[in-house]
View 1 (cartoon, rainbow, N blue to C red):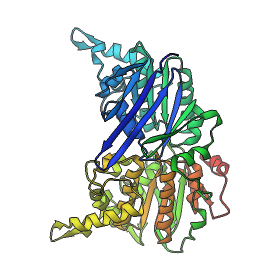
View 2: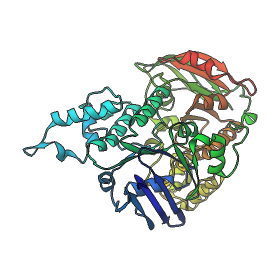
View 3: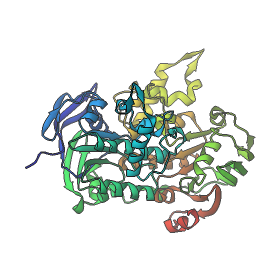
View 4: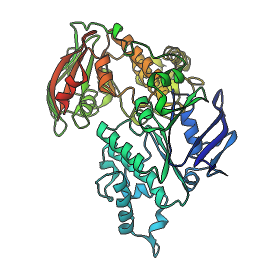
Length: 504
């Protein structure tokens, strides 16, 4: 039998207080797409970092085409035919598309000691064709949408085909988390077209997508591979049970806990407008309400959320919070008035990665932990421990660096921060993006806890199903305007098609 394109044998890795990987083995055959799933904290991120040369295993090895390879850096991984497409993206926004695709490989385009931009752009154009991305190679990545930057990441990984003579394995870490359905369909078509030249490891919390694109699925739990099974015979329910060790709750979105909003209005806006983003937006938000905002990318809902949280200023219109007219010059003014934002890009905007879990949790409420100009560290740690327990955050201690946690646990830290700050309105921008089904259930429980206490929530969900399941009322946006307003009571939820006809 021919050797697998990529194989991991008996890999273990420990950190202080945590055994992240415990004797993990799996193999990817040539031209195969293998799904890798597991809850946040199951060990997927650690395994990917070992494959990408960021971490070194305590034991075990990596084999490419049957030969053991030493992968001590991302460059060595790349040279061995292993490319990584990161969930949080590694694109440098100040560089051009071509410069990002060939970053670290500039010597391929040297002529008389100078880089030939013409040759580099020509080569980049060929790679962009593979992902059907029609943009100029000389365009700066800062000017691209998040989804377009994701496609550039994939083009960068696919450029290995023209450089490596042997087999290429591409690790896709949550590649669809920010893509619209048409972009997901395109990505899957690209993956299938490239199977004769590359193998893929597909990591996603969208289990339907894993079953759709993968040949086989490996399930991880608590640092171990607990099951390998063919995708053709697996079900989402079975995968979920294997991941979390329990069956999917019959009431996933906690509809029975949905509260009736009070008559008290905590936030309202009239005629809110920002040129090029949204116009003439008006609505009221009540205590205990989850107000969902649905719309495709470019509908204006993300910009509206950032405006309500003080990150951008409107050009016209009025905003009232707690009965007082407000005009925010900066996000801290929104926080002071009782409005918080859980951003979509949590690692960039939601957390200070080098700070500890405790420091991140108390950051928005720091005055509560200061006495005579000195931070009360004991009180800070006590509060952090309480919320670590309440939200089931997997961390060695409150003093662990927040950036080292898995995505789902990082999101829980961000949510805890705003609970500790005591905001009255919390804007959730894709709060479950890139986190597993078990962590999602914890987030849904937290949303219901907040509304039961009278907090108001504005939700930009990861899926229409999520928006419908969690919301009391739904606004639909298209081209910067509100096109529909739908009630979403328990037992009377609208269908997805009811929203879609107003979205597109």
